[in-house]
Image (cartoon, rainbow, N blue to C red):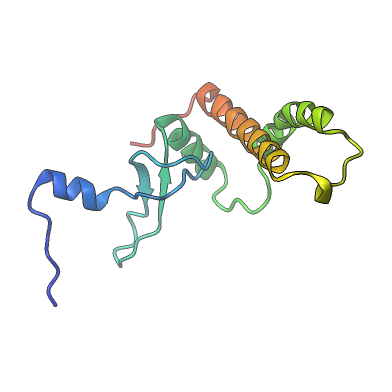
Amino acid sequence: MASVSPTTAEDRRRLWHPRGTLCAVCRRPTRGFGWFDPVRSKQPRPSVWFCSMACQGFWTRLARERWAMVDLTEQEKAAIRAAMKPVAEIMEEIGWQARFSDLTEAQVLTLIEVAVGGFQDAMHAMAADADAEVPF
């Protein structure tokens, strides 16, 4: 079966955009900012997608400094530390002595949302503050 090439600009945009993909920096839904390995010509090329130019610039700067990111970076460690305060406030409401298995679904979801939101907000703030140079 032959593949059909998109003919209109709208078809190319619709087929190209990585729907359902999460930002490589903050894990929010992507909005069309991306990177692919220009050296590899075989499909599928390694690619990374972002929600904003700030996240793309932040990732580019990190990738330039050290490509292999196995351990948490200093920025990620700082974002985790920044997320501790909102998590502590929610834990104060829930009760520090409460066992995790005793929490209601709503409490667990709130705790997760606060932890992830605090981390994402801190990463976004650092990405916005970073004076990342665009590589092209």
